[in-house]
Image 1 (cartoon, rainbow, N blue to C red):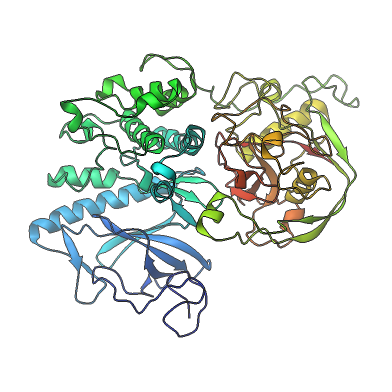
Image 2: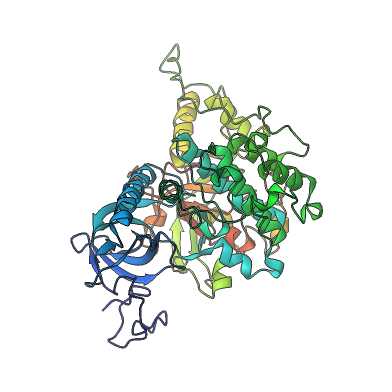
Amino acid sequence: MLCPGCFQEKPAAAVCPHCGYDESLKRSPLVLPHHTRLYQDRYQVGRVLGKPGGFGLTYLGWDERLQTRVAIKEYLPRELAGRDADHRTVAAHSREDAENFRYGLGKFLEEARTLARLDHPNLVRVRDFFEENGTAYLVMDYYGGLTLAEYLTRQPGGRIPEAQAIGILLPILDGLREVHAKGFLHRDIKPANIYLTAGNRPILLDFGAARQAMGEHSRSLSVVLSEGYAPIEQYQRNGKQGPWTDVYGAAATLYTMLTGQVPPSATDRLGEDSLPGLGELSPTARIALRHGLAFSPAQRPARIGDWQRLLLEETQAPAHAPIAMPRSRQAPKTPKAPAQAAEPLQPVVPVPELVRLPGGAFWMGSPDRAGGFLQRLMGSSPGDERRHEVTVRPFAIGKYPVTQAEWRAVMGDNPSTFGDCDDCPVETVSWEDAMAYIQQLNTLTGQRFRLPTEAEWEYACRANQYTRHAGSDNIDTVAWYNGNSGGQTHSVGQKQPNAFGLHDMSGNVWEWTASAYVAEYDGSETSSTNDTKASRVNRGGSWGDAPGGVRSANRDWNDPAGRSSLLGFRLAQD
């Protein structure tokens, strides 16, 4: 039978030998029984994840069709409804409660439909949603790891260094920009709603728009707002909300990460508007927090991108001044055919420098299965770094990641969050974007560039050495990471190369590969996939990662359309 605590096979004993979960312990009558089947028996319910909220419960679940773990969120506002005698059906407490319950149910499903349309590596992914048992359920990806709130409780003083804090928050802001572009708001950004995955990826969880709308409808805001993280307009019946509302929540989260304190509630700031601890922070952080946590909505940056820029500025800028954002991507224009088709096209753009490698056999994976900072923190090790021998053919690979100048020369724009740095790696590019660049570059030059396979990438990174990072066990000599990056990318080639003469294989930006991600190595790492929907492996870690994230063996993945200021790429060639 499957353990409801981890969904691994276990004997009939109550306590699981894998995770220690004891399913014989008494379970609240508000919670669905273990092994409850949902949606025509497709999903099986397990343990409760986190603390039950006022508006619902989230369970660890098992997808019988895909044979994988999921998170299942059940709509169950405790003030309005409870579990019936059959331990499954949700029923309202009274006729008045029933009207409010149905209103909230409609908002919950409306929010589910919106979330299902979002596709970003730093936003929780909705797989499915349905109505059953008199209520509704939302099925999401399940990620191993812990919340930012839990992580902060394990840090001295409940706070973390500025570079690390900004490194966690910037990808979340990238995701919020996509949320706002779809006309949606989060309304409940706080450390408890940011999840740090075992692969060192921050994920924004638990959108609060349905809860806010329901609270306003029922005139009961006490259970809707997160004290310290909600701005004044969320307390007001007719308060105008917009992207600036989420700016406040994001700024409050950064304040908590940097000071170890929750900001004073917005209502407390009516009398005395003070933010203790700002004097200990850098000028950049102080300026960004003063703007982001401005009491009046009109004094806050109007867009997430505006505040994101303030986090990276060294001097103060007015809150509503037009802050330059990366120019929007434009589809590459098809070049005119050359005058004589028989002649190869001459390079008309800068071609990234490549290094020819001899190929050969090497040991791929981690010799000690040492994980990143979350694996060490949680006492677990990854399941996808099994050491195994792989042989690669001779190939060439970029000496550096593709830079912003190289991208602009081919594509005519610069999508990078950290723009205006020609020698910095291009970032905020998806796998699809990288493939568009390669196609255009191949058309302009007549050459055949591609992305490296995952095996080629690690072979190039290791350069016949089995150091923890690319070319050294001393991370600061070879990598830009959250301990030295200052929360941003840096010009390529500043750190020492590995034995193959390759720079920035560890840190600066994660790099897309051509290989489909498979959790347990099965040979996919040695090949490219033609499946345009398959998740692709990212390697190398970035400026925003802890030391464990920039190890030579560390792996991550993203959807082909996923974009982040952590993601770039380098070229390869046969």
